[in-house]
Length: 313
Image 1 (cartoon, rainbow, N blue to C red):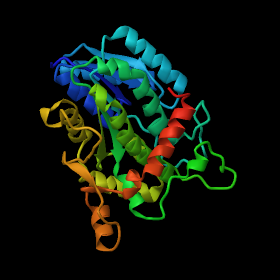
Image 2: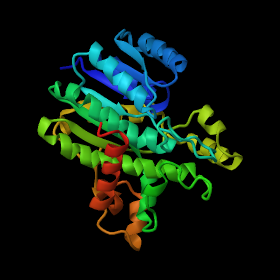
Image 3: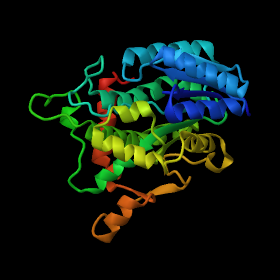
Image 4: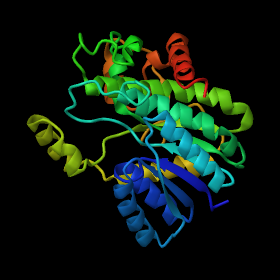
């Protein structure tokens, strides 16, 4: 089947937009799930013109809002007979943010967008995915999870609603890395939950890509200079979009589930050791992920929090 139905969240810019273009160019029906409708319309027109594929739909979705997710899923299910591929690409990382921002449900915005939202959306669309002969889910993870090779690094589960916003400074980069670690752990748990119905759930370890001028403008002057310097060698988003496509379509990953995959399209393994030279190898390599992600206590804690905060989905 070449005419797959694909949902990509955050498809109006960056890797998400490049992925929408790639899937459309290959003749698939693409649903761009975007929070900013105006930017989404512009990207939709560009993709249709570039690919000559009119089957590119735009649907409004704020992944940080449970109400928006429920409305989106209901509308999608009434419009489409099944879902073949679900890509959780949208993420919240507002460079320079110094204050706690909460979702409509009162969840810290990084966790609402990067973990709880994808969890709820997956649950609500599971029945439509089960109608596909080859259903696949891909979660966009990040190399920021490497910070968890530090044995002191932990998710502050007691601050996901900003409980300590009056006593602790907000660190958007820590919240981003923590929420992506949570997404990785949810990947493992969701793969286990849907294995019997044939839904593959994997995560991709996003490597550095060329940043937009809009993103760089949000950074401090020092980080702006570093980002522009890195952009000289960072590959464009299209390369990562090709990897999205390969993982979600190729026969190579047809029966792969519950795995983290790197930018080389290799399966990332649990680190054997996190001390001494091994720790340096883990941090600078792309072949292993932190043991924190495999601790059942951590996995069960984020799973139960997702279930309780979303009302059991």
